[in-house]
Image 1: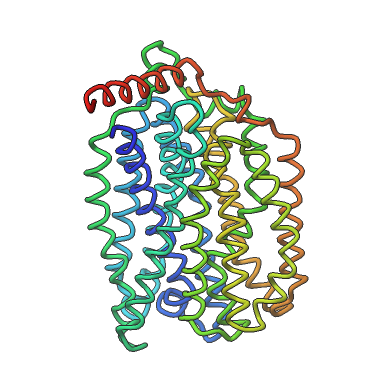
Image 2 (image 1 turned 180 degrees about the horizontal axis):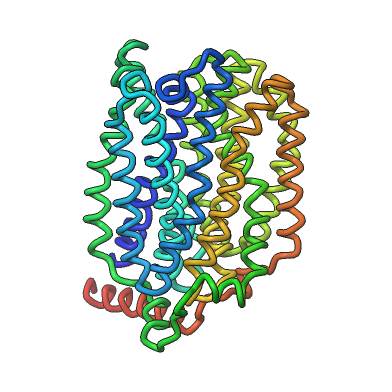
Amino acid sequence: MKKAKILLASLVGSIIEWYDFYLYGTATGLVFSSLFFPNHDPAVSILIAFATFGAGYAARPIGSIIFGHMGDRIGRKASLMLTLIGMGGSSFLIGLLPTYAQIGIIAPAMLVILRLLQGIALGGEWGGAVLLATESAGKGIRGFFGSVPQLGVPIGLVLGTFSFTIISALTTEAQFMAWGWRIPFLFSIVLIVIAVWIRSGIEETPEFQRKKEQGELEKIPVVAVFKYNAKDIFRLIGLKLGDGFFNVFLMSFILVYATTYLDYSRDTALLGLTLSCATMIITIPLVGYLSDFIGRKIIYTGGLVAMIVLTIPYFMTIPINTTWFFTMQIVLLGFVWGAIFATQGTLFSELFPANVRYTGLSLGYQIAAAIVGFGPMIWTAMGTSFGASPFAFGGFMIASLVVSLVLILFAPDTRVVSQYDDDVEDKVTSLDNEVKEKTAVELS
């Protein structure tokens, strides 16, 4: 029961954080470009709107340092409570913002500030949620535990896109643009209250507790991690770049790409995205479980190779019809990227020791996220110059994927050799076995 509560706490908070973060991504092309960044040229409006979308990614490394420091000094739990409040509060306020037509330039300025706060909060949430799960796992189940908070990404996005789909279906275009788009943002406050309540009842992770009791916590974790683990931070950044660019395309920019360059309707684009994310909900825990038997490195390598092979076919077939569009979205995002993402939290966390793990894991991941977050700006410019060229867009993706593939080939097999404390894991596993034996005796 204790383990289940920890997994629930890591998952629920992660779902809400990503729900809020991707609400903005969904609204960027559909709403914000016209309501907050009006311009006589729609392409310019979209470009400016996606610049603010990228600003949220750029702010994530700041959050990783702030909350990573707190997580490595005070504890994982305290840090995660604050990230929830920061993200939920920002999203709620976005739902209350007046538009450019109502207050002029102040509207987009306030939107950018709230987006930056979202990015800072998410910069600390992802790493903390992963560690809450993996540091509470016994031996042999860390991969599965690490995959559970990763479910927050597809579930959060499905909830976000589904909410927009429902509101869009129930309102006219004028109503949706006037007030309908605000409802999903305002609903964030309800979700945050639920998540804070769940997380308030969990305990600190065993590995952090041990480091604290032994007085082995770093005074300035960000300095220590660059002093002793700089190579792993840069390795993590490179490993994330390849799938990161494609992920941002498949989960955010695809809404603009499909509607602007492929002439699909907004509802069709949202449905394709929702179906592929729903598929990931099945893929991620299954692959996470499998990684405990065959290793994270093998799955990660295979996923990158599959992505490289399917990149050009993806861009060539999705314009054909909706069947191809849905199928390729499901295959590339739902299965292939889902498999890669299922292993990332555990794989990356296994590179760092417990006293700097929150900072190292979060900082490396969020620096990569800051880089790939500006992909939509690049692709908007590419679309203006080349249209929906499979070789322009495909070539960009393949180049970044190759970088990650080379790095994973030289990365350690962390299932065999990791920075996790085996003594703590032995104790966690032993306690699990004692609880099982005690329960069996009581039942008999």
